[in-house]
Length: 400
Image (cartoon, rainbow, N blue to C red; front, side):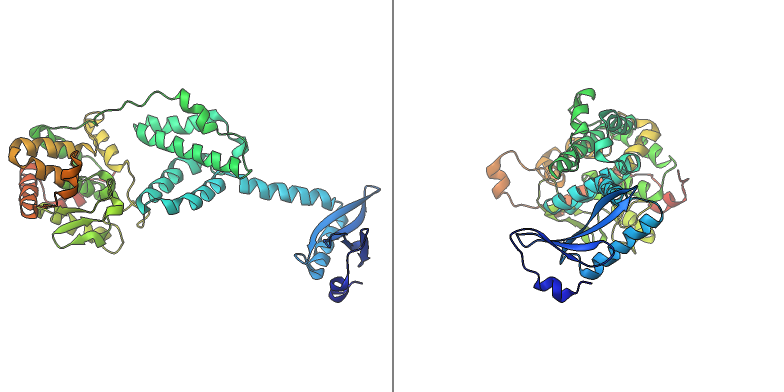
C-alpha cells in the first residue's frame, strides 16, 4: 500500500515506473517528474486502463475514492472508462450551451459598458433568446433557428430590437469560437436574409390637438399603471425613453431631475426641470415603487427597468403603430414649443440635451437658462394636459 510519504520521496528515473497501491491502482512516475494515477482493470474479457488524474492535484485519498467509484461501475456491469467519457461530454455540453457561453461573453464585456447598456443587453437576451435557444449547445444551433428568433421579434414591430439581438448573438457565437466552444456564427449568416432596416426620422405626431387626442386614447387603453405613468412622464419631460425606463429615485432632487453623464447618450449631465404635473406623476408612482430603486421598474422584477417595448406596445394597441413611437414625444415637444416660442430655440434644444453642431459654441456656451427652462416645461405641461385626469386616476384603469 502506498503512503503520502512514499509518493513524495519518489524521484523521476530515465524510464517511467510504477508505484502500486491496491486493486489495480498505481502511480506512474514519468521521467519529467509528472506523477499520474492509473487503474488497471478488466471488462468484457479485456484488460483496460483508467486515468484518474495527476498527483498532487488528485491526492492519494482522492485516487482511492475514484478507484472505489470505478469498482462500483464494474459491479454494475458498466465500463468505468465509458462512464467517465459520458460524464465529461455531458459537462462539456452544459458549458457549451448558448446561455452559458452568453454569460461568459457578458462577464468579459459588461465592465466596458454603462450600467444601463449592460442591463439592456442582458434583459434582451433573457427575454428573447434564452427561453428558446439558451439550453442548446452552440454547435447545434443552425441559422434557421436564429432567424426564427429574430423574425419573431420583428413580428412584434420591434425591428430595431431584432437587429440589436442579432448583433449580440453574433458576438456571443464569435466569443464561443474563440474559446473553443463553437465552430461557426449562424447569427452572421442570417444577416442577408433580413429586410434592410429603414433609416430616418421616427414616427411622431407634431400637431398639438392630434397629440392630445393620441395621449387620451393611449391612457384609456388597458395597461399596467406603471406603463401609463411612465408614458405621461415621458411626454412631459421629452427625454429619451431609455432615460425614463432606467430612472432611479436617487436622481430626483426636489423639483429637478439630474441625469448623470454615464446615463446620457452624449455622456453629459442633463438637468431636467420638473413641472407640477411631472411631480404629480412621481408622487403617484412613489406609492407603487417608492420602496425600490427604480421609479418605473419592470412589472415582474422590481430591480430591473421596465421593458424597452412597454410604452411602444401601448401606443400600438391604442392604434398608433407607425404613427407615433415613444421617442416621438421629443419631436412633438420640439415642433410645438419652437412654434409657440421661436425665440427660445436654443433653450429648447438644451432641454432636449442636443449638442450644438458648432463645436466652439458647444464648448464655451455654459448658459443654463434654468429659470426659462422651468417656465417652458410648465407651459408645455399646462398645454399638453389641459383637461386631463390626475395621474392617480390612472391607477384605476383596466390592466392588460
